[in-house]
Length: 257
Ligand code: GLY
Image (cartoon, rainbow, N blue to C red; front, side, top):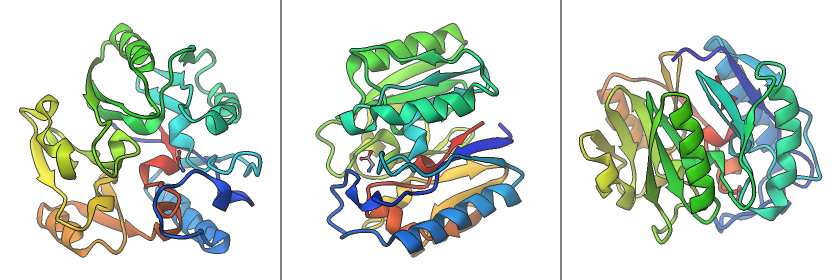
């Protein structure tokens, strides 16, 4: 799929008040803004037009726009994020998305879904059952996907250490190949897929995004970069230190279509 647009939202004052379990200390907002700008410039260089929402200090996690919407080649769905402090983030992303998808579907209570738990792999979607995405939300999403000709399978990541979202530990590299870290790599739902395992000590590198022929990867992950470079991907390393401190990865920073 060739991406032409992405919604992004720079981190706001108060970014450090967002949810985190990283233990890496508070983020530096100035540096986060620089890293966000580099991310946006990279997407633009790859042919993606950026739709930039204003930062919103009322929602410290709102830079992680991916959690608020799922966009496929056949329609869009607004989520209902699993963290109460994040539910209000959906409105602004929904307003922007309606410019292209006038009537997006919506996850309804008591369902919850975070977009970070939704991994598109062509005509199929892996949906993570997590502390953010519940069974009801996953079922609503799977039903909506089925109505649009997509299949879905659920991967329960609750209890897998270090995973906030499914895509914290799993990314699609294209065709039948996945990048996976830790326990996810062994999950039966991935049988039949070629798994590229993230080298020991670089689990954060599991979250990467393929955009128009390039593979955006987190900087400072030499073993993973060497592994992926050896598989002939055109790597674009991006510094993500300040988003990592807030449990965010490359995919979290945009809604792409
Ligand atoms: N800080 C990102 C999240 O917890 O959703």
